Length: 113
Length: 113
Image (cartoon, rainbow over all chains, first blue to last red; front, side, top):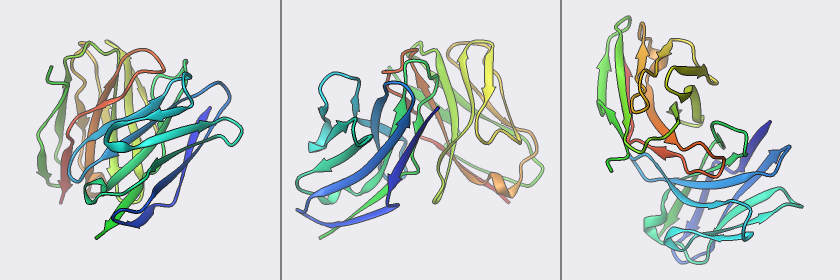
């Protein structure tokens, strides 16, 4: 069985501030982890993914995430928020044997000028 | 590649009406799935398919039917629409490996009056 918990349904930051979106997972076998982004009135698109190579993964638009097995975490960060980063962010977990990834409930990122 | 396409983009139904939401992908993906997205609930899996002729229920299957006669198409049928089915519906497809990215369609916004 696999599951994902995203801490905080809403995160608010000022433009230029650090972005930190939290994701913790549960999996009985080695996981594959994903972050997806959903801009208003659009479908989800892949931001980055961890597939058991490097534990620090870089994605699009300056985002990165670090896989920490000891903490069962895969938090998403960006050093400096931009207004265009305002969106819904979803963490997801998959394994080699799973047909469909399991998604978290999402975190809405709000960026203030 | 068009990726994952969904039609229609918007639909208004009256209670008791039936309709089919269309989904197609041109990436030769084995796995396809349907989600609904409601405020505060994240993405909830309705039905999924692991190949032509094979479908299974997800988290919230009641009131919906699916079929998968071809690799490309995965329509979702609402048998007798209810106001509780007012939602945004997303179709997604994915290759057969745990590391593969889930690709999403642009969504269908459905309102049931």
